[in-house]
Length: 223
Picture 1 (tube, rainbow, N blue to C red):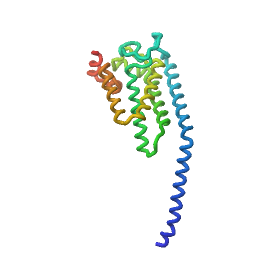
Picture 2: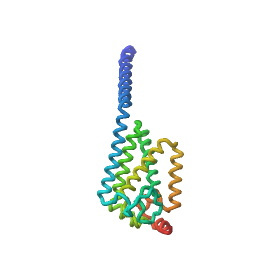
Picture 3: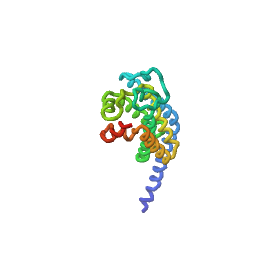
Picture 4: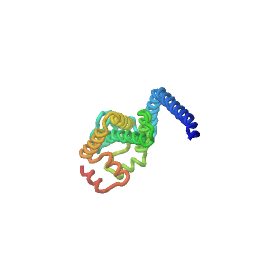
């Protein structure tokens, strides 16, 4: 018992040192957090610029080949779809933002270390930008044309692709301030609403891209 008592001050001292080191680390993280956030936001902007430079380099126009820019274009089965600032598929990108934010929160909980908003947003922008580059590659464009109702789809204009990424950022930011139930309700409302109007949405788009179903394509074509 005496030996055990003799070790107690040493153990207590070690515990105090560990707590002190942890508090110092936390203090440093809080001190450099604003700077790190600024860097993350700057890198997110750079990621958007790089993504759109790659989209443009792959042969896509800066704006619609029609020669003008509209804020909204709602005719899906037309050559101007995905060429202007927003369209029916903008809602899918907002939902992307919801999903990315939810994934960041889940990873933070599972790892036991909270991911900052700026760092999570940077990761989301990088992923969304990479998808925009892939989506506008010949292999995905031809996949869309062959497996979905997008017969007139030849890829996005740069302004539309940029707007898609920014729509994701809007969704990501909204998910941060809205309660979970409202975020889920908004996503469901957008999916149901867009699906009802144009017979397409994020869910159907994924299904038809991965494993096309003739019945769905026939239903969409009947619009």
